[in-house]
Amino acid sequence: QSVVTQPPSASGTPGQRVNISCSGSSYNIGSNYVYWYRQLPGTAPKLLIYRNNQRPSGVPDRFSGSKSGTSASLAISGLRSEDEADYYCASWDDSLSGHVVFGGGTRLTVL
Amino acid sequence: QVHLQESGPGLVKPSETLSLTCDVSGYSINTGSYWGWMRQPPGKGLEWIGSIHHLGTTYYNPSLQSRLTMSVDTSKNQFSLKLDSVTAADTATYYCATTPYTDSPWFGPWGQGTLVTVSS
Image 1 (tube, rainbow over the protein chains, first blue to last red):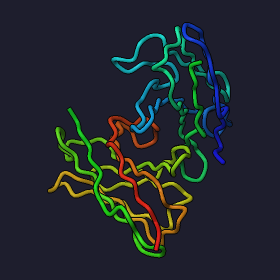
Image 2: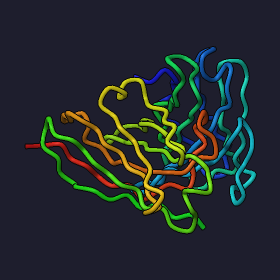
Image 3: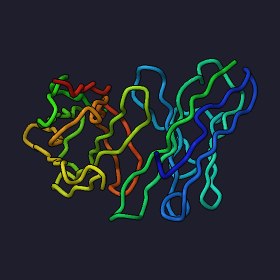
C-alpha cells in the first residue's frame, strides 16, 4: 500500500464539482510539492497539476489543486463525461534518501 | 517536441533480467534534464522506479534499488533500465518519461508504455 492515500473511487454528474483528496505525511506532502496526473483508459498518465496548484499549458481552469498541511486536493468543476479517468497524486518523500511516491489512484466516474 | 518510446522484450522468465530502452527524439539527452521510469501492474496504480541524469547520477526507488540499474547512452540518445531477478510481481506496463528535476514527481511527456510479463 502507498504511503500517500487516495479514495479508490469518486463520482459526480455532468456539471457538478468533484473533489479528490490525497493524504500523506510530513515526509512527503507536508514538506514537498504535490502533483496530479490524469490517466485515461489505455493511455499513459498526463500531468494535470504541478507544484500544488499550477496548471500546465493546455489544461483547462476547470481543474485546480490545493494543499494544506499533509493533505492535498484536486477539484474538477463543470464535470464532463470525458473527465472519467484515473487520477493520481504524487510527491517527493524525504525518507530513505528521497524518492517519488504516488497515491493509489482514484477512479472518477461521471454518472 | 520531445517524444519517448519504450522498447524491449514483452516476456521475461522468472529469475532473469528485465531490460528496457527508452528512445528519445526531438531533444538531445546531452542537453540536460532527467529521465525517469515508472511502472503500473495490470489494474493497479503507478510506481516510480527511478530517475537518471544524463551525466549518470541516479535516484532509485528504495524497494527496487538492490535489483536495479539505470544508464544513459548519449551516443544513441536513449536511456535504459535493467531489473534483475524478476518475479511475477514485476509484471507491469513500464513507462519512461522526462523530468526537469531529480527530486520531483514532475514527469512529462511520457512514452506510450510497454507491457512486460514475467512468466515461464
